Image (cartoon, rainbow, N blue to C red; front, side, top):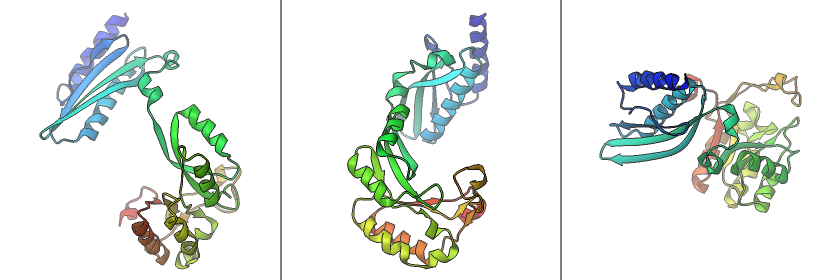
Length: 262
């Protein structure tokens, strides 16, 4: 029965991918399969997306329906890119001894909001459990559930430089209103920090955000948390100039709406 199901799945996918640049999905060991493809436009990223989607969909047709990538092999020649993906289709019970590729793949958390009640040791414990090697610390400085500071983030990074990267935080009570972005108080504080060489980014600065205060027990229920700020303010201009001068990236938060690009 299982062999019949596997044969039907393989036949179905041979039909689905026959009109694309994908190769057939072929068995490559116990619960292990191989798929390859090429892209004449040298778009390796798009090719990988197609491979992963095909492999995931293929696993979903089997009894062991959890897709687990194992290895990738990519090549470019002239204007063509090729990639082979080896993957496994496992059951939920098989996921404990997951592949070496997944267990050893280094992860970098580029967007973590530091809270006042978190210790460095607590974060490292969670990072180790999740397989995260390094983490960017973005302080939130609000009166409700924030109250973390740039100095707190820097202290963590100085104690554990191989685990944490400190940003000069931009989520603050004194940057939540339009009038705040016409003042110099934040740039006066942020500029020496950015120029110190101890911080490695600026932000996160919110220009459009749909709040969720009513869903979070530790936030101010009298404030929706919604925020909409113009991008062309005097303070934002100075932040862009500061980023250009110091080489630090600016992290800006916006919603996926058309007017954000205008």
